[in-house]
Length: 215
Ligand SMILES: C[S@@+](CC[C@H](N)C(=O)[O-])C[C@H]1O[C@@H](n2cnc3c(N)ncnc32)[C@H](O)[C@@H]1O
Image (cartoon, rainbow, N blue to C red; front, side, top):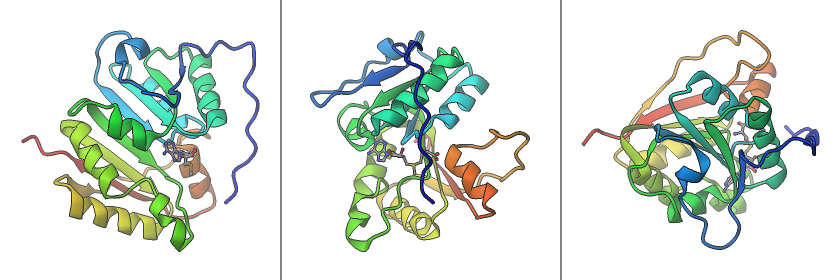
């Protein structure tokens, strides 16, 4: 399914407290810049339009939410959504989530990692570009706190099966557990925009959750 063109972000809206470009050189782990206080942090990789971050941050004020999105126009759009809602516990980093996780995120520092509808890279020769590979899931295991969760949802059954196999072969994460599906109660009551459009098209969503063992 192709993506619809994005609305422009209102240039008068101040997104400076919600949008942080990582830049090409030495991105760093600076939660004190992003959040007030030191509540547990959850990370979403590939935030798209930011629906998950907005709903999760509004619903869990006792947690901080960090989104990382590689496409600048989507990162700005998502940051604008957070700014308009006045959320102080969610921000967007613009950059490569794989690199950020590998090079910047300290071990045992995140309460949860969310990966929703990662790009499927359909062609066989492009599959190596997929986000979920052995080194990514090993990094995920390293940066989760004991008891922390990895959430992986997709509409691509083959990616789901391969992703679960990679997690089983490369990590000690417990799972997969299947979170229950529930009916949407309003138009934006979905985990993400991709979940919304998949379900509105009557297509299945494959959901899995994993937990890092306590010790
Ligand atoms: C198919 S979209 C899904 C967006 C959103 N998660 C949703 O479910 O609506 C995948 C998103 O991941 C982003 N992305 C792809 N590779 C990335 C990477 N290495 N780091 C951060 N974001 C990435 C893409 O730009 C795109 O916005």
